[in-house]
Length: 403
Image 1 (cartoon, rainbow, N blue to C red):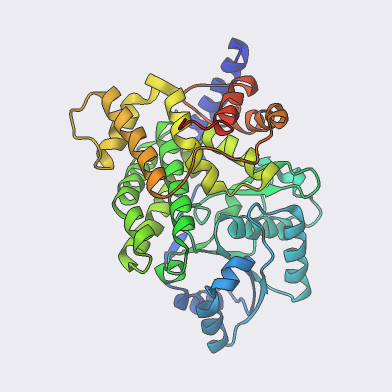
Image 2: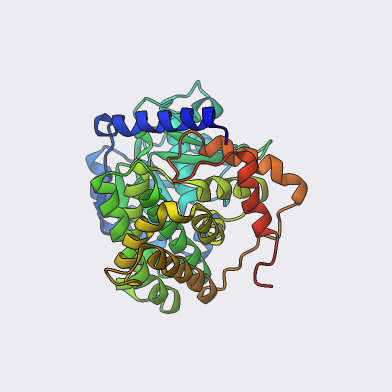
Protein backbone atom coordinates (compact mmCIF):
# COMPACT_ATOMS: atom_id res chain seq x y z
CA UNK A 1 0.00 0.00 0.00
CA UNK A 2 1.40 3.41 -0.92
CA UNK A 3 2.32 5.87 1.82
CA UNK A 4 -0.42 8.40 1.07
CA UNK A 5 -3.15 5.78 1.37
CA UNK A 6 -1.58 4.42 4.54
CA UNK A 7 -1.68 7.90 6.02
CA UNK A 8 -5.34 8.23 5.10
CA UNK A 9 -6.23 4.85 6.64
CA UNK A 10 -4.38 5.49 9.88
CA UNK A 11 -5.84 9.00 10.21
CA UNK A 12 -9.35 7.63 9.66
CA UNK A 13 -8.78 4.89 12.26
CA UNK A 14 -7.29 7.34 14.77
CA UNK A 15 -10.36 9.53 14.44
CA UNK A 16 -12.66 6.58 15.15
CA UNK A 17 -10.60 5.57 18.17
CA UNK A 18 -10.78 9.08 19.62
CA UNK A 19 -14.56 9.05 19.09
CA UNK A 20 -15.06 5.63 20.77
CA UNK A 21 -15.85 6.92 24.29
CA UNK A 22 -18.51 9.27 22.90
CA UNK A 23 -20.38 6.79 20.69
CA UNK A 24 -23.64 5.19 21.91
CA UNK A 25 -22.43 1.60 22.22
CA UNK A 26 -24.55 -0.62 24.42
CA UNK A 27 -24.67 -4.27 25.37
CA UNK A 28 -27.86 -6.28 24.90
CA UNK A 29 -29.56 -7.45 28.06
CA UNK A 30 -28.65 -11.10 28.58
CA UNK A 31 -31.50 -13.60 28.99
CA UNK A 32 -30.69 -17.15 30.10
CA UNK A 33 -33.59 -19.04 28.51
CA UNK A 34 -36.22 -18.72 25.81
CA UNK A 35 -38.76 -19.33 28.58
CA UNK A 36 -38.23 -15.74 29.71
CA UNK A 37 -39.27 -14.24 26.37
CA UNK A 38 -43.09 -14.06 26.84
CA UNK A 39 -42.67 -11.70 29.79
CA UNK A 40 -40.29 -9.52 27.76
CA UNK A 41 -42.64 -9.47 24.78
CA UNK A 42 -45.60 -8.48 26.96
CA UNK A 43 -43.49 -5.74 28.55
CA UNK A 44 -42.90 -4.27 25.08
CA UNK A 45 -46.51 -4.73 23.96
CA UNK A 46 -45.65 -7.31 21.28
CA UNK A 47 -48.55 -9.63 20.50
CA UNK A 48 -47.35 -10.85 17.09
CA UNK A 49 -43.75 -11.80 16.46
CA UNK A 50 -41.76 -12.68 13.36
CA UNK A 51 -39.15 -15.40 13.93
CA UNK A 52 -36.38 -15.30 11.33
CA UNK A 53 -34.40 -18.52 11.00
CA UNK A 54 -33.29 -21.05 8.39
CA UNK A 55 -34.39 -24.46 7.14
CA UNK A 56 -31.52 -26.24 8.87
CA UNK A 57 -32.55 -24.89 12.26
CA UNK A 58 -36.15 -25.89 11.56
CA UNK A 59 -35.04 -29.37 10.47
CA UNK A 60 -33.19 -29.85 13.76
CA UNK A 61 -36.30 -28.81 15.66
CA UNK A 62 -34.45 -26.09 17.57
CA UNK A 63 -37.36 -23.64 17.48
CA UNK A 64 -39.84 -26.02 19.10
CA UNK A 65 -39.20 -24.91 22.67
CA UNK A 66 -39.66 -21.29 21.70
CA UNK A 67 -42.80 -22.06 19.71
CA UNK A 68 -44.27 -24.02 22.63
CA UNK A 69 -43.53 -21.21 25.09
CA UNK A 70 -45.10 -18.59 22.81
CA UNK A 71 -48.19 -20.72 22.21
CA UNK A 72 -48.65 -21.36 25.93
CA UNK A 73 -48.58 -17.62 26.52
CA UNK A 74 -51.00 -16.76 23.69
CA UNK A 75 -48.41 -14.87 21.66
CA UNK A 76 -48.87 -15.19 17.91
CA UNK A 77 -45.78 -15.93 15.87
CA UNK A 78 -44.86 -16.35 12.21
CA UNK A 79 -41.72 -18.08 10.98
CA UNK A 80 -39.56 -17.10 8.04
CA UNK A 81 -37.20 -20.04 7.52
CA UNK A 82 -35.63 -19.40 4.11
CA UNK A 83 -32.53 -17.53 5.27
CA UNK A 84 -29.44 -18.79 3.45
CA UNK A 85 -25.87 -19.09 4.75
CA UNK A 86 -25.00 -15.61 3.52
CA UNK A 87 -28.37 -13.79 3.71
CA UNK A 88 -29.42 -11.99 0.57
CA UNK A 89 -31.50 -8.98 -0.30
CA UNK A 90 -34.20 -11.44 -1.43
CA UNK A 91 -34.29 -13.02 2.05
CA UNK A 92 -34.74 -9.61 3.62
CA UNK A 93 -37.52 -8.64 1.19
CA UNK A 94 -39.42 -11.89 1.79
CA UNK A 95 -39.13 -11.67 5.58
CA UNK A 96 -40.12 -8.01 5.52
CA UNK A 97 -43.24 -8.87 3.53
CA UNK A 98 -44.18 -11.55 6.10
CA UNK A 99 -43.68 -9.05 8.94
CA UNK A 100 -45.89 -6.44 7.30
CA UNK A 101 -48.57 -8.85 6.06
CA UNK A 102 -49.09 -10.24 9.56
CA UNK A 103 -48.89 -6.87 11.32
CA UNK A 104 -46.02 -7.97 13.57
CA UNK A 105 -44.47 -5.68 16.15
CA UNK A 106 -41.20 -7.44 16.98
CA UNK A 107 -38.51 -9.68 15.51
CA UNK A 108 -36.62 -12.67 16.87
CA UNK A 109 -33.46 -13.64 15.00
CA UNK A 110 -33.10 -17.35 15.80
CA UNK A 111 -30.02 -19.18 14.56
CA UNK A 112 -26.50 -18.34 13.51
CA UNK A 113 -25.15 -15.05 12.26
CA UNK A 114 -27.06 -15.31 8.99
CA UNK A 115 -30.48 -15.38 10.67
CA UNK A 116 -29.53 -12.57 13.03
CA UNK A 117 -28.11 -10.47 10.19
CA UNK A 118 -31.28 -11.01 8.19
CA UNK A 119 -33.37 -10.00 11.24
CA UNK A 120 -31.32 -6.82 11.69
CA UNK A 121 -31.67 -5.91 8.02
CA UNK A 122 -35.44 -6.45 8.17
CA UNK A 123 -35.53 -4.17 11.21
CA UNK A 124 -33.56 -1.53 9.31
CA UNK A 125 -36.01 -1.68 6.39
CA UNK A 126 -38.94 -1.31 8.80
CA UNK A 127 -37.26 1.69 10.40
CA UNK A 128 -36.50 3.26 7.00
CA UNK A 129 -39.13 1.91 4.58
CA UNK A 130 -38.21 4.31 1.77
CA UNK A 131 -34.52 3.45 1.74
CA UNK A 132 -32.88 0.42 0.14
CA UNK A 133 -30.38 -1.73 1.99
CA UNK A 134 -27.69 -0.71 -0.49
CA UNK A 135 -28.10 2.92 0.57
CA UNK A 136 -27.66 1.93 4.21
CA UNK A 137 -24.37 0.11 3.69
CA UNK A 138 -21.38 1.52 5.48
CA UNK A 139 -21.38 3.36 8.78
CA UNK A 140 -24.17 5.19 10.65
CA UNK A 141 -26.79 5.34 7.92
CA UNK A 142 -29.76 3.78 9.72
CA UNK A 143 -30.23 6.36 12.48
CA UNK A 144 -33.77 5.37 13.41
CA UNK A 145 -34.97 3.05 16.19
CA UNK A 146 -35.80 -0.50 15.08
CA UNK A 147 -38.79 -2.50 16.32
CA UNK A 148 -38.06 -4.80 19.26
CA UNK A 149 -35.19 -7.05 18.16
CA UNK A 150 -34.26 -10.18 20.11
CA UNK A 151 -31.36 -12.45 19.16
CA UNK A 152 -31.31 -16.15 20.02
CA UNK A 153 -27.95 -17.56 18.90
CA UNK A 154 -27.92 -21.30 18.22
CA UNK A 155 -24.23 -21.29 17.39
CA UNK A 156 -21.53 -20.07 19.74
CA UNK A 157 -19.55 -18.11 17.24
CA UNK A 158 -20.90 -15.21 15.28
CA UNK A 159 -21.39 -12.76 18.13
CA UNK A 160 -24.11 -11.12 16.04
CA UNK A 161 -26.28 -10.92 19.14
CA UNK A 162 -23.96 -8.17 20.43
CA UNK A 163 -22.98 -6.27 17.30
CA UNK A 164 -24.12 -3.23 15.36
CA UNK A 165 -23.50 -4.91 12.00
CA UNK A 166 -25.62 -6.79 9.50
CA UNK A 167 -23.80 -8.39 6.58
CA UNK A 168 -25.97 -8.81 3.48
CA UNK A 169 -25.29 -10.18 -0.01
CA UNK A 170 -26.83 -8.55 -3.07
CA UNK A 171 -28.81 -11.35 -4.71
CA UNK A 172 -27.98 -10.17 -8.23
CA UNK A 173 -24.33 -9.10 -8.07
CA UNK A 174 -23.25 -11.38 -5.16
CA UNK A 175 -21.50 -8.36 -3.65
CA UNK A 176 -21.41 -8.71 0.13
CA UNK A 177 -21.58 -5.57 2.25
CA UNK A 178 -22.09 -4.53 5.86
CA UNK A 179 -24.59 -2.15 7.39
CA UNK A 180 -23.22 -0.71 10.64
CA UNK A 181 -25.23 1.42 13.05
CA UNK A 182 -26.09 1.40 16.74
CA UNK A 183 -29.84 0.74 16.36
CA UNK A 184 -28.94 -2.69 14.90
CA UNK A 185 -27.66 -3.93 18.28
CA UNK A 186 -30.36 -6.33 19.54
CA UNK A 187 -32.26 -5.26 22.65
CA UNK A 188 -31.91 -8.74 24.18
CA UNK A 189 -29.53 -11.68 23.68
CA UNK A 190 -30.83 -15.09 24.74
CA UNK A 191 -27.85 -17.26 25.74
CA UNK A 192 -29.71 -20.54 26.16
CA UNK A 193 -27.40 -23.58 25.88
CA UNK A 194 -30.35 -25.91 25.27
CA UNK A 195 -30.88 -24.50 21.76
CA UNK A 196 -27.28 -25.39 20.85
CA UNK A 197 -27.33 -29.04 21.97
CA UNK A 198 -28.33 -30.43 18.55
CA UNK A 199 -25.64 -28.51 16.71
CA UNK A 200 -23.49 -30.92 14.63
CA UNK A 201 -19.82 -31.20 15.66
CA UNK A 202 -18.38 -29.58 12.52
CA UNK A 203 -20.60 -26.51 12.85
CA UNK A 204 -19.79 -26.38 16.56
CA UNK A 205 -16.12 -26.27 15.58
CA UNK A 206 -16.28 -23.72 12.77
CA UNK A 207 -18.56 -21.35 14.65
CA UNK A 208 -16.37 -21.67 17.73
CA UNK A 209 -13.36 -20.74 15.63
CA UNK A 210 -15.38 -17.84 14.25
CA UNK A 211 -15.67 -16.53 17.82
CA UNK A 212 -11.94 -17.11 18.29
CA UNK A 213 -11.25 -15.05 15.16
CA UNK A 214 -13.42 -12.20 16.49
CA UNK A 215 -11.53 -12.14 19.76
CA UNK A 216 -8.08 -12.40 18.18
CA UNK A 217 -8.65 -9.77 15.49
CA UNK A 218 -10.18 -7.37 18.00
CA UNK A 219 -7.23 -7.85 20.39
CA UNK A 220 -4.41 -7.46 17.86
CA UNK A 221 -5.93 -4.39 16.20
CA UNK A 222 -4.90 -0.80 16.90
CA UNK A 223 -8.22 0.47 18.30
CA UNK A 224 -8.52 -1.52 21.50
CA UNK A 225 -9.73 -0.27 24.86
CA UNK A 226 -9.29 -1.74 28.33
CA UNK A 227 -12.79 -3.21 28.06
CA UNK A 228 -12.36 -4.78 24.62
CA UNK A 229 -8.99 -6.28 25.58
CA UNK A 230 -10.55 -7.76 28.70
CA UNK A 231 -13.48 -9.20 26.73
CA UNK A 232 -11.18 -10.65 24.06
CA UNK A 233 -8.95 -12.35 26.64
CA UNK A 234 -11.99 -13.80 28.43
CA UNK A 235 -13.34 -15.12 25.14
CA UNK A 236 -10.05 -16.75 24.14
CA UNK A 237 -9.69 -18.37 27.56
CA UNK A 238 -13.22 -19.79 27.46
CA UNK A 239 -12.85 -21.06 23.90
CA UNK A 240 -9.63 -22.97 24.54
CA UNK A 241 -11.13 -24.45 27.72
CA UNK A 242 -14.43 -25.53 26.19
CA UNK A 243 -14.43 -25.90 22.40
CA UNK A 244 -13.04 -29.44 22.32
CA UNK A 245 -15.54 -30.62 24.90
CA UNK A 246 -18.43 -28.97 23.02
CA UNK A 247 -17.15 -30.63 19.83
CA UNK A 248 -16.74 -34.15 21.23
CA UNK A 249 -19.47 -34.08 23.91
CA UNK A 250 -22.24 -32.04 22.34
CA UNK A 251 -24.64 -32.56 25.25
CA UNK A 252 -22.28 -31.02 27.82
CA UNK A 253 -24.42 -28.13 29.04
CA UNK A 254 -21.57 -26.30 30.77
CA UNK A 255 -19.34 -26.39 27.69
CA UNK A 256 -22.20 -25.17 25.50
CA UNK A 257 -23.03 -22.36 27.94
CA UNK A 258 -19.39 -21.31 28.20
CA UNK A 259 -19.05 -21.21 24.42
CA UNK A 260 -22.13 -18.99 24.16
CA UNK A 261 -20.62 -16.60 26.67
CA UNK A 262 -17.28 -16.71 24.86
CA UNK A 263 -19.02 -15.75 21.65
CA UNK A 264 -20.82 -12.93 23.47
CA UNK A 265 -17.57 -11.53 24.93
CA UNK A 266 -15.83 -11.79 21.56
CA UNK A 267 -18.76 -9.97 19.98
CA UNK A 268 -18.50 -7.19 22.56
CA UNK A 269 -14.78 -6.90 21.78
CA UNK A 270 -15.00 -6.62 18.02
CA UNK A 271 -18.09 -4.42 18.05
CA UNK A 272 -15.92 -1.61 19.39
CA UNK A 273 -12.45 -2.60 18.22
CA UNK A 274 -13.39 -4.10 14.84
CA UNK A 275 -11.94 -7.09 13.05
CA UNK A 276 -9.34 -7.30 10.29
CA UNK A 277 -8.29 -8.86 7.03
CA UNK A 278 -9.34 -12.39 8.04
CA UNK A 279 -12.91 -11.15 7.98
CA UNK A 280 -12.50 -9.02 4.88
CA UNK A 281 -11.20 -11.96 2.85
CA UNK A 282 -13.71 -14.38 4.38
CA UNK A 283 -16.63 -12.09 3.50
CA UNK A 284 -15.52 -11.99 -0.13
CA UNK A 285 -15.52 -15.81 -0.22
CA UNK A 286 -18.96 -15.94 1.35
CA UNK A 287 -20.38 -13.45 -1.11
CA UNK A 288 -18.92 -15.03 -4.22
CA UNK A 289 -19.07 -18.74 -3.41
CA UNK A 290 -21.37 -18.97 -0.37
CA UNK A 291 -18.53 -20.38 1.75
CA UNK A 292 -19.78 -20.49 5.37
CA UNK A 293 -18.30 -17.56 7.23
CA UNK A 294 -17.01 -19.49 10.25
CA UNK A 295 -15.28 -22.02 8.03
CA UNK A 296 -13.60 -19.31 5.96
CA UNK A 297 -12.38 -17.55 9.11
CA UNK A 298 -11.04 -20.81 10.55
CA UNK A 299 -9.08 -21.57 7.38
CA UNK A 300 -7.64 -18.06 7.12
CA UNK A 301 -6.79 -17.16 10.71
CA UNK A 302 -3.31 -18.71 11.04
CA UNK A 303 -2.33 -17.58 7.53
CA UNK A 304 -3.06 -13.93 8.29
CA UNK A 305 -1.46 -14.04 11.74
CA UNK A 306 1.77 -15.38 10.24
CA UNK A 307 1.85 -12.65 7.58
CA UNK A 308 1.43 -9.93 10.22
CA UNK A 309 4.69 -11.18 11.69
CA UNK A 310 6.54 -9.51 14.55
CA UNK A 311 4.10 -6.61 14.74
CA UNK A 312 1.72 -8.81 16.75
CA UNK A 313 4.09 -11.04 18.71
CA UNK A 314 3.58 -9.21 22.02
CA UNK A 315 -0.19 -9.31 21.68
CA UNK A 316 -0.20 -12.97 20.69
CA UNK A 317 1.90 -13.62 23.80
CA UNK A 318 -0.91 -12.25 25.99
CA UNK A 319 -3.51 -14.28 24.09
CA UNK A 320 -1.39 -17.42 24.35
CA UNK A 321 -1.02 -17.01 28.12
CA UNK A 322 -4.78 -16.40 28.49
CA UNK A 323 -5.45 -19.55 26.45
CA UNK A 324 -3.18 -21.62 28.72
CA UNK A 325 -0.83 -22.41 25.83
CA UNK A 326 2.23 -20.42 26.93
CA UNK A 327 3.48 -19.63 30.42
CA UNK A 328 4.22 -16.13 31.65
CA UNK A 329 7.74 -15.06 30.77
CA UNK A 330 7.89 -16.97 27.48
CA UNK A 331 9.64 -14.84 24.81
CA UNK A 332 7.09 -13.01 22.70
CA UNK A 333 8.12 -14.59 19.42
CA UNK A 334 8.03 -18.09 20.91
CA UNK A 335 4.61 -17.56 22.48
CA UNK A 336 3.28 -16.13 19.22
CA UNK A 337 4.45 -19.22 17.34
CA UNK A 338 2.94 -21.48 20.02
CA UNK A 339 -0.39 -19.69 19.73
CA UNK A 340 -0.52 -19.96 15.93
CA UNK A 341 0.50 -23.62 16.09
CA UNK A 342 -2.29 -24.26 18.61
CA UNK A 343 -4.79 -22.82 16.13
CA UNK A 344 -3.40 -25.04 13.38
CA UNK A 345 -3.66 -28.05 15.68
CA UNK A 346 -7.25 -27.10 16.49
CA UNK A 347 -8.05 -27.05 12.77
CA UNK A 348 -6.58 -30.54 12.37
CA UNK A 349 -8.59 -31.92 15.31
CA UNK A 350 -11.77 -30.52 13.77
CA UNK A 351 -10.91 -31.71 10.24
CA UNK A 352 -10.76 -28.16 8.88
CA UNK A 353 -8.46 -27.97 5.89
CA UNK A 354 -6.37 -25.15 4.44
CA UNK A 355 -8.04 -24.82 1.04
CA UNK A 356 -11.27 -23.51 -0.46
CA UNK A 357 -11.93 -25.59 -3.55
CA UNK A 358 -14.39 -23.08 -5.01
CA UNK A 359 -11.78 -20.37 -5.56
CA UNK A 360 -11.01 -19.72 -9.23
CA UNK A 361 -7.73 -17.98 -9.97
CA UNK A 362 -9.36 -15.60 -12.42
CA UNK A 363 -11.66 -14.37 -9.61
CA UNK A 364 -8.86 -13.40 -7.27
CA UNK A 365 -8.39 -9.75 -8.42
CA UNK A 366 -12.12 -9.13 -7.97
CA UNK A 367 -12.22 -10.87 -4.58
CA UNK A 368 -9.19 -9.01 -3.28
CA UNK A 369 -10.76 -5.75 -4.45
CA UNK A 370 -13.84 -6.53 -2.37
CA UNK A 371 -11.65 -7.35 0.65
CA UNK A 372 -9.66 -4.15 0.19
CA UNK A 373 -12.85 -2.11 -0.07
CA UNK A 374 -14.24 -3.63 3.13
CA UNK A 375 -11.07 -3.51 5.19
CA UNK A 376 -9.62 -0.13 4.25
CA UNK A 377 -9.77 2.36 5.86
CA UNK A 378 -12.17 0.95 8.51
CA UNK A 379 -10.30 -1.99 10.04
CA UNK A 380 -7.41 -0.92 12.34
CA UNK A 381 -5.22 -3.85 11.31
CA UNK A 382 -1.63 -4.27 12.58
CA UNK A 383 -0.24 -4.20 9.03
CA UNK A 384 -1.98 -2.39 6.17
CA UNK A 385 -2.38 -4.19 2.83
CA UNK A 386 -3.98 -3.15 -0.43
CA UNK A 387 -5.85 -5.34 -2.90
CA UNK A 388 -2.69 -6.57 -4.60
CA UNK A 389 -1.12 -7.56 -1.30
CA UNK A 390 -4.31 -9.31 -0.15
CA UNK A 391 -4.23 -11.58 -3.20
CA UNK A 392 -1.65 -13.78 -1.46
CA UNK A 393 -4.26 -15.16 0.92
CA UNK A 394 -6.47 -16.42 -1.91
CA UNK A 395 -3.51 -18.15 -3.53
CA UNK A 396 -2.68 -19.80 -0.19
CA UNK A 397 -6.17 -21.30 -0.16
CA UNK A 398 -5.97 -22.78 -3.64
CA UNK A 399 -2.68 -24.53 -2.89
CA UNK A 400 -2.26 -27.65 -0.83
CA UNK A 401 0.04 -26.29 1.84
CA UNK A 402 0.44 -29.69 3.47
CA UNK A 403 2.35 -31.08 0.49
